[in-house]
Image (cartoon, rainbow, N blue to C red; front, side, top):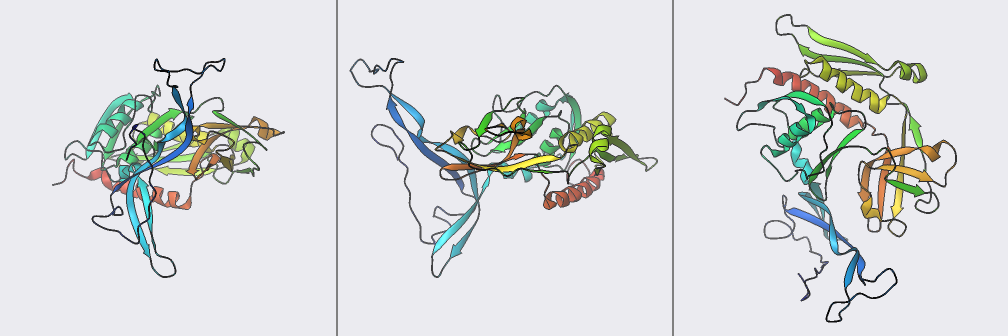
Length: 363
């Protein structure tokens, strides 16, 4: 709905357990979430003089997002109904990026797809362009890495393909799906803080933790099996300085898709770069009253002020982000693996090994 002046109206309403076909709550329906904040203010010069049109009407400029800004775009994954003391509907939303785990990299019906040695960003864009879904990319969301690599995807999803490409990227690169704009971001992290949060002003308190639980500085990599001898490639990679300072952190990779030693080296280097040193982590809550929270995004770097000691010089990356009514909660530091991630990695390794002998397309 809009006013006569063309401004959007935001309407809040409730439904009494009304779900299913013909309602606003049905599995698969697209959902966009907007936030509204700020105002329209008179436009003035640096001297404070009011700027007007030729008719004498004041010129207005938007401060913040008074007409709304989309912060999430996705679809209804499931819903639940409650009856009794309270009646209502709870809905779980998934971003359109979740569909990357359900879309195969394919060429027509061919599910074994070879990419020549080329810039990683070129392959990533082609993966997203093939049988395109709602998760895509913008002109500047995917940067060039300066690294060329060849890939062979066998019954691989777009999510698995993206993760494989990320595994070949240099130290300091990251990727995520922007749930507001439905674009995939693949960039090198900033060398300077994108945000500096001051203790006592932007953050009330902070509890920092550093752990070496997931250190990886001694890596054994099992690659492709030779078709004639049946012997697999086995390589060892280590970070001697990290082992000397922190002790051994053993990590094993089994991925039969790897047959090029240069690619195996880059994948191992990626693991060492991310986990060779103990990882700092902390969770911060930033209020919109103290900071422009809409400028805070995943992958950005955070610095700290009003803090003495070693923490003063820390620069940590934003790895998780959740938005509330007037605040944003972020986790900064290293990206810690969950137990479910380890289990999924084992399952993927077994699946990739089984996919080595499949035909190029279903019979």
